[in-house]
Length: 231
Ligand code: ADP
Ligand code: MG
Picture (cartoon, rainbow, N blue to C red):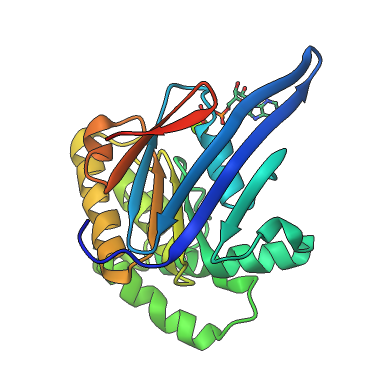
């Protein structure tokens, strides 16, 4: 580990998730336990359909567990009202998905600012942070470019800047390099780990890429609904 471990940013205890189907309940997560501290990075691997996205959505308050508990910054987010959860999510969590979901009509810097629109925060300060963040992800010279004029790797860098704009405590990423070639994936890995080391958030990344995963502090594998940590 690169720095002293901080407080626990996100904890899951006995998290179970079932989806109702016509043939009865489909149990995707049997009882997942994890704790990730500030300044710590975790890669989650596992076969397709093993529940990686389901787990990430639950950790990100986007979906509720059927049973078990999630605590983020010491709080159970699912005890909040829907509007409070949304506010909590905007404040504490950043997301990067496989597909960047950038707004095509907006520039890189405008896209990075999107998560500040829904928040009651200081827009002026956020507007100042966006160019600095784009600089940090290596897009200083391309801030005014729309997504169509950026490469796949550059678009994902904009998505990373967008996820960081509210200085989240936890960054959650679902196959962020899934659509990128090897060299670009590597540079995106550098980008994530540099930001994480400097800003000290907890980083949880779902990936299929063993090489990418090995760069994280810890690696865990989801199989049979259980999360098993590599030794
Ligand atoms: P992974 O990200 O590891 O590929 P997912 O978490 O997306 O896996 O899905 C795990 C399992 O849960 C799959 O069998 C998938 O079909 C099922 N699943 C995911 N979301 C739903 C849903 N909303 N309703 C029913 N089944 C779902
Ligand atoms: Mg998935």
